[in-house]
Amino acid sequence: MTAQQQPAEAQRITVIGAGVIGLSTAHELARAGHRVTVISDQEPWQTVSAVAAAIWFPYHSENSPAADLLLARSLARFEELASIPETGVDLRSGLNVDHLPGADRSWTRIVAKTIEAPKAELPEGAHAGVYARLPIIPMTTYLSWLRTEVEALGVVFIHATVKELTELNGSADLAVIAGGLRGGQLLGDDESVYPIRGQVVRLANTKKLTDWLCDDDYPGGVSYIIPRREDIIVGGTDTVNDWNRDVEPETAAAILRRATELVPELEGLEVLEHKVGLRPARDAIRLERVAGHRIPVIAAYGHGGAGVTLSWGTAQRVVELVGESH
Image (tube, rainbow, N blue to C red; front, side, top):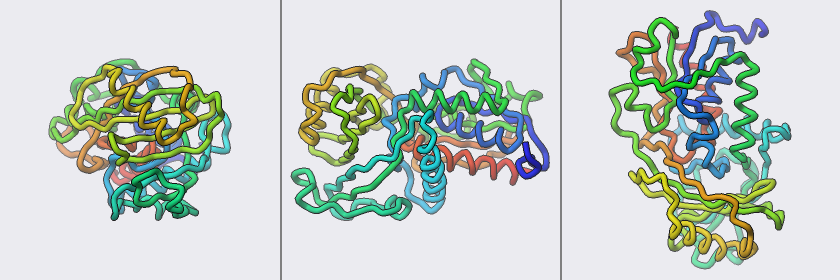
């Protein structure tokens, strides 16, 4: 640890949650010189983060200058990680489709060299589209790498369920709530978090497809095709306040039908797995210090479908908030 990395006062910090937000936050806090413990009742690969496609894209997240900063910081980090093969992160080109005029394209301010798609290259009925080169993050590989990196920084992991923040009294100088859907419940002052159910299908990428395609308003439902090194994630659903964690066969069939209409090369590829995850959504990300507890608390939840996309920016902002708490 260099003198520049050592904070003015190293603290004992407990991060609640071992998804991508929790692990990224633990990484940055430990790298800043704090003594970090992660408490979670799920392993990283059991969290909703593991269900993500995942592509850097602000899906179901707020549009604000504060969020733009988180996006830019995360994009920069993922672009760096793409040079490390063990992370699994790749930069890949693809097409984001707009069906309606005036679609939100604020994300293109952050991404270099986006290109307007010619009308002839758009799916039938599409209004416009943008080509971009974005990070693709295979979550099983990535979360395993990130967990190893975090442990190498000296972070301690405890498998447990925290029911009340008072359980941390005496063992932590500060707590970070990265508990996804349970974030507001733990703090006891926020009932605004709700699930957005996502169901995906994982296909074998035996045809070595590389280009991704996202169409949020495709007739019949949201559709995205995200090729990775060995597989392809095909989605999806975005049903609000749906707590069903079971795979719905009819939904899976509809997802594959829409995807194959958009990318005929998917026809006949082996189905490897079906997955369901509940995205922890909120009208705005909660990323702030929270008063009224015996130890200082920082909230870091409500990222919707953009937890991976916002993860490193969120982690860096938490480190800043820790510094501001002194």
